[in-house]
Length: 351
Image (cartoon, rainbow, N blue to C red):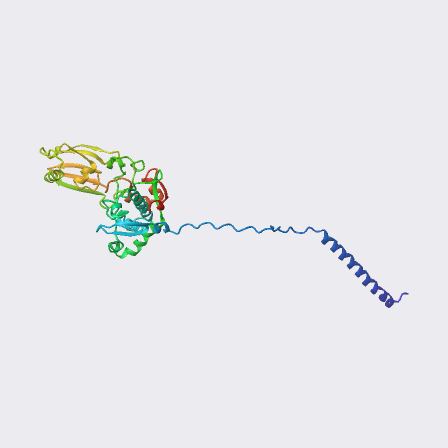
C-alpha cells in the first residue's frame, strides 16, 4: 500500500512546474499575436506648414459711408453749413415724412433723399453760392433742424430721432440708378389710386417715372378735400394770372373741355376759352392735387380733390401702406420707380 504523505510530497513540485511551463507558452502566443495585429493609421504631417488664409476686408460699419461724405448746404438765410451726408439726410427725412411712419417707409424715404441729393450734386445747381444743395423745398428738399424737429415731436423726440437715424444708417450709401446714373427720385404725399407719369406733370417722359397703382386711401389725413370759390373769386384769380379768358357769360359755361390722363388726373381744361394744364389749374385754384372734379351751382364752383402733391414717383402714404402690408424698402422702391436699380453711391466721384 502506498504512503499518502510521500505522494503529496511528489505531486506538489510536479504541478508547480507544469503551471510555469503553461505560462511561458501563453506569453509567447500573446507576443506573436501583438506582432501581427494591424496598427491604426496615423496622420501624415506636411513637410511645410499650410499658411493661414489671408484676412478679408471687413464690411463698412453701419452708416459709415454716409458719415464720410461731406455736403455744403445753403441755408435759407444765405449761409452755407457743412455737414455729413448722414446728418443732411436725417434733416430731410425728418422734414419730408412723418416720423410715426413704418420703418421701411422711412428707409425708402432716406434712399429717395440720398438719390435726389446725388442728382443735385451732379447738376451743380448751387455751385455759384459755394454749396452743393439747399434747404429750400421749392428748389431741393424740405429740411428741418434737430432742435425744430424735437420741438415739433415733443415727448416723442428721442424715439423719433433714433428711428430716423436708423432708417438713414440701414440704407447707408444706397441710391436708385437708371443706366448707372442717379435718377430724379421725386416723391409726393398721397395719390388718388395711381401715381402719374413724368410727362403728365412736366411734359417729359422718364422710363422710371410711369403710372403705378398706389394703395393708400381714406386713412390719409385730408385725403379728400374741397375748395369752393365764388364766380367773382374765379374772375379775380384769372385776372391776376393774366389768363386773358372770357368770363362774361354764365358761370355754368366757364369750365369746359376737361381732359384726363391715364392716371385719372386733369390733364387740361378750358376756363373761359383759355386752356390750362391740370397743374396750372391746381396752382390757380390752390388745390391739393390735380386729381379733382369741378362742378358749378348757383354761381359757385366746387373742386373735389383727392390726394396731395404732384403725383410723380413715390407716394409717401402709399409707401407707408405697403410697409404695413409687410413690404420691405427695396420692394417699395422697386414698385414706385419702374426699372430703377439700387447700388452703392459713388461718393468719390462727387467730391
